Length: 400
Ligand SMILES: *Cc1c(COP(=O)(O)O)cnc(C)c1O
Image 1 (cartoon, rainbow, N blue to C red):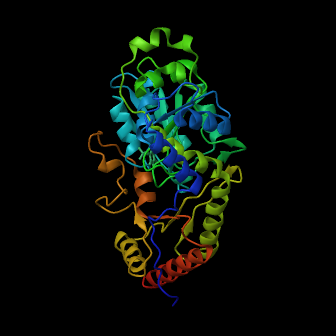
Image 2: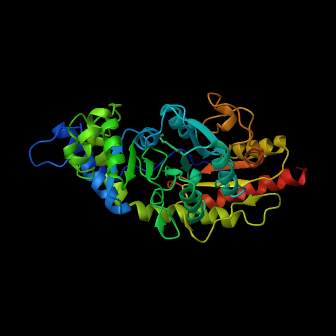
Image 3: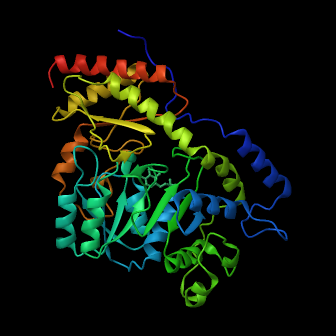
């Protein structure tokens, strides 16, 4: 038996020194609000928006208070009406159905596949049966569905796609950056995502009307003219007075912290993926354990790691989770009867009418999930994989 693991699964890296220095400058001058600038000054929030728009190759970018805020604002900005249905993943995190509810929508859940992406056959049939005109697609845990096929389905049926890229900042499908397929894409800069400002979100689109509405929603007053990565002033003509102010702006302090992290994103992605591959290599050919198959077209940024124990008895999965926990390996299980931490799932969200999702229930019953912070070394990943391998083996031999 290898030794136990002593690392901390929730410990992210420190903010880079350039971010700390920039944050200190903002605090020294005191102009933390994005619209509080002196003559000739470009707010940190504006610079962040310009830089992220350039990185993504998109026309417009808006920084906001959280990823969940961006998702709700996106739905309102594309014209979702009260009570309208919104297709979304049955396997995602609570802020996604929460954002739909916040925007007055009603979630319609789409099944997940064994490889943790949206089931496109189920999507097609639920577009037909629900009559929904909007899809909020969550690239949950960084697994990217065949985006060419998904967009073909949605375009053919007039479904507007909003992408939740909380776990795919910097990732690509078939050479196209994640977030460049739908009409709007939303990112989170919350501590456990790819860039960290504690809380924060970003919203992208090429559509000037949508961006103008999102900007007004975020609480622009009539100061939208300073949004250099925003919609042209003329677009606001009617929108500015017809759109409510639902304050949710990002401040200059957070933006200052994020800018150096954005510049380092691609390098960080390589580090995450190196860790992911070490985990994957260490868990190959373990009886009873299924690794997630990933398409060659998917260029992921693997800030977390998942595997499944397909068709195992629930008690046995719980047993593996416990065995690993006693050895310092924190696995989150999406099959437990009651959610703990972030493991809620479609049947935990009781503000939504119950929906039958047998395939998702089967997949989640055996799904284990692990954070992969960059404070873990490659050797840490070898140890983590060895412990999981040993404990899955032991449980498997005792019978599943
Ligand atoms: C974190 C997260 C969000 C929203 O992020 P917040 O910034 O915490 O509101 C949305 N979707 C998924 C899948 C997430 O993990």
